[in-house]
Image (tube, rainbow, N blue to C red):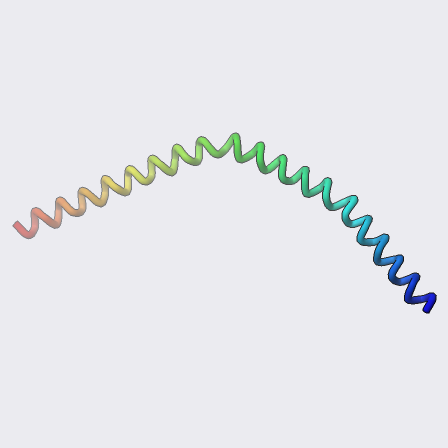
Amino acid sequence: MENLINLLLFFGKLLLLMLLVGLPLLLIIIFVADKVYKKVGPRYEELREKRIRELEEEEKRSKDKKGKKKA
């Protein structure tokens, strides 16, 4: 019975230690990721919109070519 209590105390301390170490690390990771996203986000959106416009133009050109072949 004493071994069981000691084992539960050990796991309780281990859980507490994991929380004390893990939560600050998690917060650091979140803040770093947020800062990186704020720097990279606008550039990514710009490139994404540019690529969407290019694809729309290609689609229009391919439709025009098909239309001319049928006529």
